[in-house]
Length: 349
Image 1 (tube, rainbow, N blue to C red):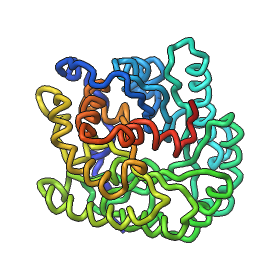
Image 2: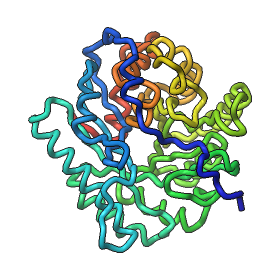
Image 3: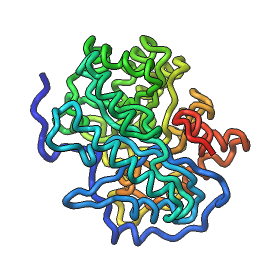
Image 4: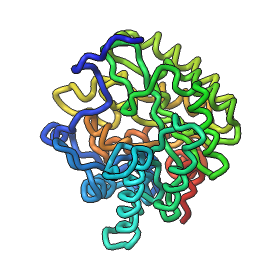
């Protein structure tokens, strides 16, 4: 067993500093007509931070052409008064309600939450089938899959994922019994773990070649705690894991999440927020390597908002993505900004 976590350990969270973000220099929007499907954001109303439809649309409406978004599991609006395995269904109900509001056109053209990813505890084993079917009913045709985060780190300086997973979650027989329920229902799995665990994802992908797996946040490279100041070693270890994973055709990758506090970069700690050129220069080796290994048709840029909002505003972040993709062909850009996400999450129009 690992040592108890320090309550001040590094985590993915943090409340964006509005005053600090206001110091980010305004930028002209690059390629403003390029359609974007943002495949990863959250919505919540927490004691210290509110990020709901109004806040999301303020970000997606900041200049880029965001046509649709994908809501991803964040323990929002779980049901009360029901058995524990059914509580996450409230998140799907909530996200579907937001999607219905956006689909009305009253709030503009962006179809927020056009696809929904929630949570089911796959440690239920085969009994996970019932909650999965309940999510499908609650999603009104928008529910696409689940995330059961597996981020585990021995160091007490780094928090584990919000699901408090045990070490080796993805290899546990009972977890795999639950995982086996996904493909028959046409559902996908979001893999969120740290870069040290990429071989575990590859083993899972090989064991279930018919289940679509979406790797979150470029595989979760760590840059804090015992990994601080070891960028070259982390990159080499991460690249080995990504190379193994790229051999699994059922895996796609989200390009983003590198602005989190647990990551490689200190943009959130600087006196002034970074420019898009600075973000692009810092992130490009990780993004380029991912695209080289997986191909543009298996990669998609993501905002990971509001989590990554601790490091940048939305408009500047997507300018950075467009800078990183400057050398891509038109077809590759379509995949990276909307095509891959539309295929993976079955978003039409």
